[in-house]
Structures are given as structure tokens and as C-alpha cells.
Image 1 (cartoon, rainbow, N blue to C red):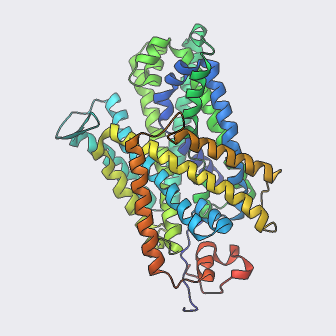
Image 2 (tube, one colour):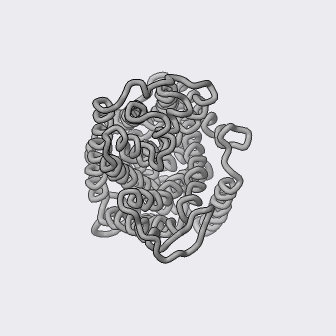
Image 3 (cartoon, one colour):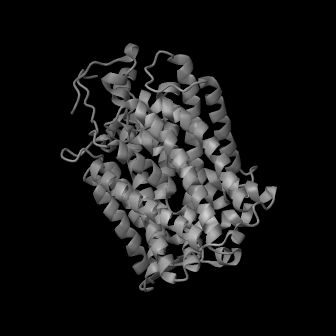
Length: 482
């Protein structure tokens, strides 16, 4: 092996504001616009709010493991890096591959969501019929909207993380302003009588709990971008936990807002419940269209966040020679992982061709990948507490062993929800998607293991962690590529 090993690095460009917008904007997204009315119908006003409070507490336990590990190992790849450090190569590869599935699956759905939102505000002419998938007719005119959105975000990400961060910040601010307008409008124009029933029954409460995990996915993109942050390391941990709490507060506020705004028959019969409820409360359909524009900001922030997440995992895997090395290279001018961005862009730009209904399968299946990653991070947290007690931890969680065990239990609970024995089992077609992704991963794992069998432990340690974060007993002194 040559004594000279090159390691690409990403540029530090993200401020505190950028990181907050990245996490919060990615978590909120579009789902609340469509589902808030259903949450109230299932569990009642206070029942739905309580379900999100419980879900937030559960997510905080997982989030605390991320909060300790991210500033300790602030490197692109996040979960991939944590699991390698705690458990080794194979668990790391599995974790990286499954979280990539999660991010790509959700990002692929955002194009159809954008087309749906625009169609509500300004009906899109049905031109150029292609085919029907899962009962949804796909037209070229509809596809082009989603493809254009994907291309725009790909260009922003290609031009540098700061470009995508600025976009994320402005879109998140617009989303927050719109949500607050919905809340204050519902307080002024709504009716407290709509708040009843406060609770329905335990079955409805459990049904909402089942939906909660998917609504909090997104805080985990913070570790992916940690290498590109120019903020104090212990601040990253605080932002991560704060983002979960902010998202929980947002969902509770939107539940209260939609309930005050309109009676149950309006909330339940509307095509886009939040928009229809706001239009009802304000007595003018234009307010419904305003809420859809707000929702489009949520679509774009979520989409942008998951593109950042997916591309950074692919970059980290490529840099560590766990995937083809082309994914581990950065653009000389923009310092962005060009090949990873191109691959994710192709997927997201092509995804509208599958229509809106079929892509729901991708979202549900990718949620399984997320909770697998949560489980692996919680395990890594405990392993690292045991194996590397002296690892520099800018933020250290109190009661580490207890928090780690609780995080594992939460992750296992989330996994149970999606298994065939659980109450929210994936559909057969969704399991097929999971198995296809796993099979593709097995092929790539074998191919790269054969191709890079000469890579030493010291070299891979350096490629993953660099000189600064490599373990002393495995350190490889090399020249680095700036």
C-alpha cells in the first residue's frame, strides 16, 4: 500500500441559523397539511396533542444518543461513522445503506407532493397521458413540475452547501410565518366548540401514535452535515434536541389550529384538510391557497434536507471505499459531492413518473430504514461508552447507560410498528421494496469488499475519521487532499 492516501473534505460553511433551519425545515415538511385533520378525528384534540407529546419524548431518547455522538465525531455520514466506530465495518455498511434508503425514499416522494400542491392552487392541465399506477393517472405536464423542483434543488446543492442552506433558511422562515398566520387566524376566527371531543378512545390514540415517528424524521440530517458546520461542537447537540422539541410544538400548534378553524365535517371531507379548514375559518377560498403556498415551502425544505442527508452518506461511504470512490470526490470549486448529488438528482427527478400513489410505498418502506438506523446508533452509543470512555465528548449525556437502553427500546418499538406482527405493518409491496434495496446492498457490499480487499484498517480509519478523529492505535500518517 502506498504511504500517500488522499482524503477529500467538505467545506465548513453552515452557521447556527443554517443548522436550525436544516433540522426544523426537514422535520416539518408537508405531512401535517394532509394529516392534521385525521389526527384529530382519530384521537380528539387533546388526544392528538398528547400523542405528539409522547412521541416527542420517545424521539428525545434517540436524539440524545445523536446529541452525544455528533459533536464527538462531527463527520459526514453521521450514523455510518458512529456505527463503524462502535461496532465495525459490516454494521456500519448496513447502517449507512439503510439510512440512505430512508432519505432517498422520502426525497423521491417530494416531487409528486409539489405537483399536487401546485395543482391545488392553480390546476395543472392534464396533457400527455403516460400510464396509470396504483389508480393514479400520470401525465407529462404533472411529471414536469416535480422534475423541475428536483432539478432546482440539485443545482442549489451542486453549487455548495451554503447555497442550499440559504434557500433552506428563507423557505423555513416562510413556512413558520404561514403556520403562525394559520394559528392566529384560527384563534380569532375559529370556534372553541370545534375542540370537542377532547378524546375519542384508546384505539384512536394508538393510531395517532403509530403515525408520529414518521413526523419526526429529519433531525438525523444534522449529523450528516456536521462536517460542514462552523459552530462550537457542544452547540450542535443543543440544536439537535431543540429541533425535536420545536417540531413537537409545531405539530401541537397545528392540531389546535385546524380544530379551532373548522368543524369535523369540513376537516374530514377536504382534499387538503389544513387549507380547507383555513379557508372555512376565514370565509374565503384564497386563504386555503395561501396555506398551500406555505405547504410548498415545507415540501422544499424537507426535500432539500433529505437531499443533503442522502448525498453526505453516499459521500462518506465513497470516501471510505465502501462504495465506488467516485462518490467520495468533491467538486474543486464548490466542495460538494458531485457524483452523489447527481445520483440523488436522477432519482428524484425521475420519481414523478411513478405517480403519487405508488410513491407512498417508498415513503412507508423508507421509514423502516430510518428506524433501523436509530437502533444501530443507539447500540453504537452504548458500545462507545464501554469501549472508548475517554473519547472526547464535547456534550456528554447524563445517565448514559440508561439513556442508551431507553433509546434501544424506543427504536425496537418503532421497528415493531412496521413488522408484520405490529399494528402498522408495511404492505407486501413495501416489503418487496425493502428486500430489493437490501439485495442491491448485498451485491454492492460484495463487489466493494472484493475490489477494496487491500484497504487496511488504518487506511479506512483515516478515510472515515481523518487525522483528528482517528483512534491513536490505528492512526495512519498521510498527506491529505484539501
